[in-house]
Length: 438
Ligand code: F0G
Image (cartoon, rainbow, N blue to C red; front, top):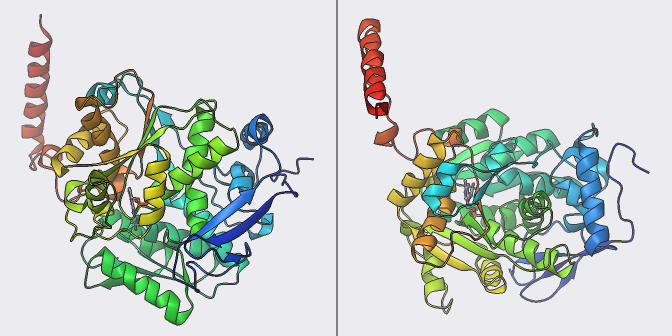
C-alpha cells in the first residue's frame, strides 16, 4: 500500500479540548488558546492501533524512510502522525525535520558521572534547533485553517524556525524578539528566511504578552508553544528517542526548560507512549533551568503550591524567561513522571558546554543545561552512575557563537605575524611532547 508517502490510519480520530473549561473543538480549529476562557488547549488522539502493532507501523516507516523520497515519509515528526496530527499529505509543510542522532562520548559520560549517558542532538534539525519539530505541525495547521499570517514571540530559535517554515508555506510571518537580547545566529536566520522581525523594548515576557495581544486583536495565528499543535510536534523528540532505544524506556530524560513548552510536550509524549503500551514504564523527567531564570525550579522546591514569576537573567539567552507560558501542563508533566526540576548556575552551564564542545559535539549554551543538571543530580546521589540517561541538546553551537557573551576559555589567540605563529605552533608541540613523556 505504500505510495512513497506515509499510509494513514483512517480509523484514528483527533479532537482538541480546553484543559481549563473542557470545551471541545474540531482538529481544524484556528484557535491557539481557548477563546471561551483563555485556557490552554490539548490535542487528543485515539489511534486505531496500540502496543506492538503501533510500534510496527512506526518502525516500518523508519525503515522505509531510507528509500522514501517524499519529505513527509522521511520526516522524524510525520513518521508518528497517528500521535501528531491527521493531516492530508498535501497540507503538510515539512522540510523534512527530525531524525536527530543519539550520541555517546566518553568525555560527556565522565563529566556527568553517568557511564552510559547519551545526548540526543536536536541541533541537527534543519534550522538548528528542536523548534522545527513543533513548527512543521504549527505551519501545517496554519495552512489547514487558511491563516492570513503567523506570529510568535521568541528568544531566537522559535523565530528562526517560524521564519523558515512560513517561507516554505508561503504565509506572511511576524516575530517579536527582545531588543539586543537574542543570539546573532538566530537573528541572522530569522531575517534571512524573511519574517518581519520586530525588536521590542523589553524582555521575552513582554514579547509574549504582545504576541498574545496580536493574535487576539488582529486574528494572526499564534505559533508559540502555547499553540497545542506545536506540542504535538515536539512530542516526537521523545517518540524518536524511544524508537532509537528499541522502545526500552531509559531511567531519566533531561532537558533545558524556559517557556516550558518542551517539558509539557515530553510529559504528554511519555503519558501517551505508556498508555498505548509503546513502553512498559515511565522514565523520570529532569527539567533544568538557569538559576537566574528559575521560577519553575523554585516552585517545584515548594511543592508547586504557587505560580512564580521572576525577572530573568542568564547568559543562556534561549531560556532567559521569567514567566513561562505553559506552566500548568508542565507541572502535570513533572508530577506524572515523578520528575524533578532543578536550577544550575551559568558557570555550571558553561562548564558543561565546554566539555560538550571539546569532544566535537558542540551545542548552544542553554542546551548544555541538561548535561549540567544530570551532573548536579549525580553529585546529590539522586541519579546513579549506572542509570540509563538521555540528555537533550536543544540547539546547535553556531546559533550562539559568542556563547551569550565571549567565553574567555574559548577566545581566539590575539592576531600574530606568520613567523610568530610558526614559533607558537612549535612551542605548543614541544610542550605536548614533553607532557606525554613518562
Ligand atoms: N533550549 C533552547 C535552545 C531553546 O531555544 C529553548 C526555548 C529552550 C531550550 C527551552 O524550551 O521554552 O520549551 O522550555 N526557546 C524559545 C524560543 C523560548 O523562543 O526560541 P521551552
